[in-house]
Length: 63
Image (cartoon, rainbow, N blue to C red; front, side, top):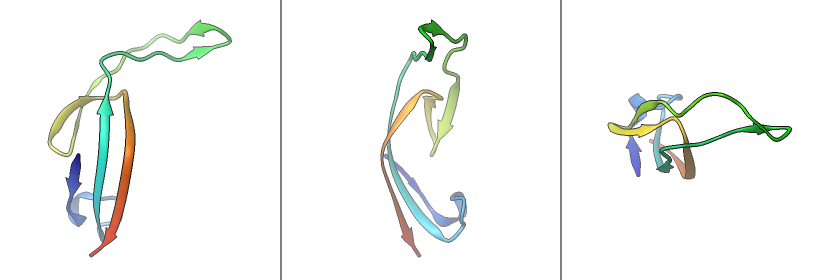
């Protein structure tokens, strides 16, 4: 879970709570062929995850 205060959100006016599940590996197939690349390290809400993740929930609360 990531809990962002308004100053850390795109609008600057909303409290944003999100739930992410990251993955160590991912792939994209186009016409059955794998596209080159790999997930990169990323920091989200002060937590180290990767660029491959699922966002299960996102709640915007106007402060």
